[in-house]
Image (tube, rainbow, N blue to C red):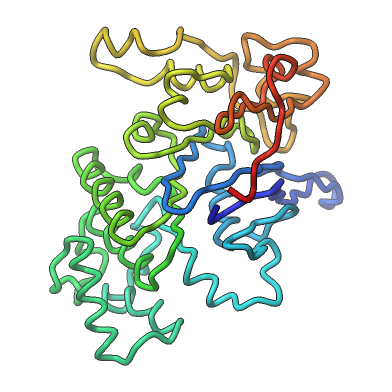
Length: 334
C-alpha cells in the first residue's frame, strides 16, 4: 500500500448565536479508513457536499486533519511535524477541478511550471528550461505556449498545464479533484486518455475524485462511495457495477443515463431517494443516509453501521449486512 487512511476526520468550526458564542462543527470528513495500492487508480465518488474533495485536500496537506492517520509510504502525514515537508510534497501533488482558478493569470506558463522546480531547488536555469519543454511535450502542447498567459489558452489546454505542473517535481501520488468536470464534453475524453497514459509512463498512483460513475467504470481499478463525510461502499470496479450492495450505491447506479435497452437492463432497479442530502452540521443520528433510504429500519436511527467485509476487497457500511456478513479489518501489510 502506498497510502493508508486510518479513521481520518476533518471538522470545520462554525460559530452561531448571539455574539457568535455557540460553536458547532461541519463534519466534512468523519472517520474514513481506506488503503490505496501503488500504481492503481482509485475512484472516489459522491454527490456535492459528500466530503470527497475535502478528503483529497487533507491527504495532500491543504487541510490539516482533525483526527486520524495518513500513512504515506510508512510515514504519518497527519501532523506533518518533524519531517521534511518539502520532500513529502514532491511525492504528493494535486490537480484541481477548475484550471481557470488554479493557474495564476499574472504568470506566464513558463513561470507557472518553473515555480515548483525553484521551490524544490531542482536544476539550473538551463536544466529547468529543458524540463519545461519536456513537460509540454508530455501533455501534448507546443513549446511556444511557454510564453503565453493562461487567458490565451482554452479550458482543456489550461488543464493540461495544471497536469504538467503536478508532474514537474516527479510525484508518485496525484489527487485528481474532478479534473474533467469543468471541461467541454469533447475535451474530457482527451484529458482522461492523457492521464491514463501518464500513469502508465510514470508509474503514478491516482486518487480520482469525481461524481461521474460512468467515468469510473472505464478508468478506476477500485471505487469508493462517500456520503455525508463517510464511506458507504468500497469494491473493485467490476464487482461494484455487477453487485452493488448499499442502497445509496444502487441509487447512484440506477440514475446513470444510458442509450440502449441492453444497458438499461444491466442497471439496478430504479431507486428514488427522499429529500435532499442533510447538512453536515446537523447530521442525522445513526446512519446518515437513513433519512433518504427507502429500506431504513429502526436500528438505522440508533446506531452507525459497522464496516462489513463481503469478501477480501468488497466492503459495505449498512445495517442490512451487519448481521449477515463476515466482519474484518484491512490487511495493512498487503
